[in-house]
Image (tube, rainbow, N blue to C red; front, side, top):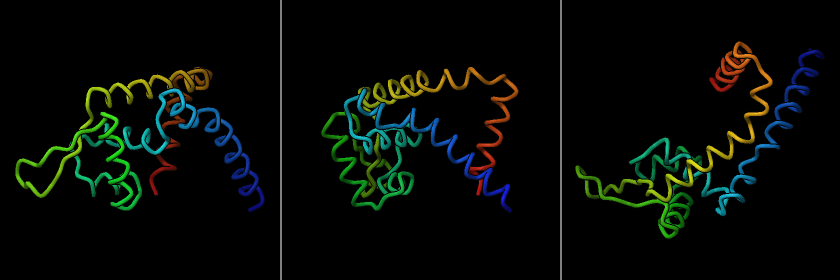
Length: 139
């Protein structure tokens, strides 16, 4: 049990060390947007056309909080709301070209931060890291 505790501590410290250096707030500062908005744009990019309740669930917030975030993104010109063709009570969320640009710049900034770490690994080690991270993410 003690070795598991030591391993857990070391894994945690090493992961946090790498993650601190690539924190989204650094990228958010570069992009000139709030961290929550940065996160929201990345979620919307992966779930283009979702409704507000799906978006809220994916972000991990309640619907009123998600609505405030989306309002800011609409006001900033990053997101549009469009009525659903099949059910006019439902509104779909879509990134604008400006929103897609922010997401792409975010990806580029994250890549620039992480590439030096990933390049230290062999292709086999990279594949193993992906496998391990997937396993850790599957609860």
